[in-house]
Image (cartoon, rainbow, N blue to C red; front, side, top):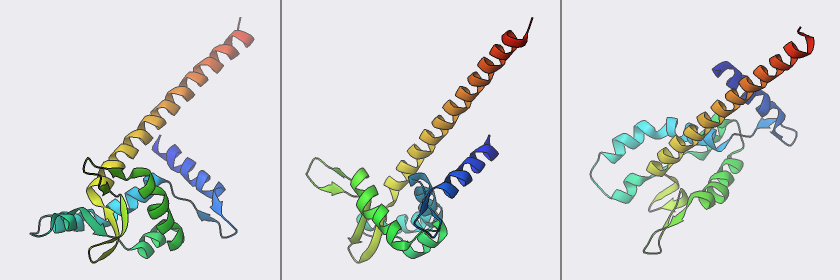
Length: 157
């Protein structure tokens, strides 16, 4: 199943591209994974240090390095994080303050991701992805059983 998934992702990435430069458009899950894999170890070290708890939640990320890793334009990645994903996932607390997924500036840091929130969103996206692939696999299996039943009745005795 895993090789089929990789093949499907490769095929979809070849079909979906930006303009003439054929750059693949990463999914939200791919963006979450790239950020998490690049910064998880750093977050664990920083969060164990003494200091401001806000600084432990929001981590500065290197947009250009992530964009290179994801093979997309750095401005597109920034736009996805700032205009789309932050808008999609930010929420208002009881005291009317916002909790942002991504912020341009937090204290003296630029391009900050709410790392614990990212981890939660990544886990949720992985679970949804897994559930969707299982549903697809079950649907394909039932289609194969139905088709084979039809063929055996049509050409059978």
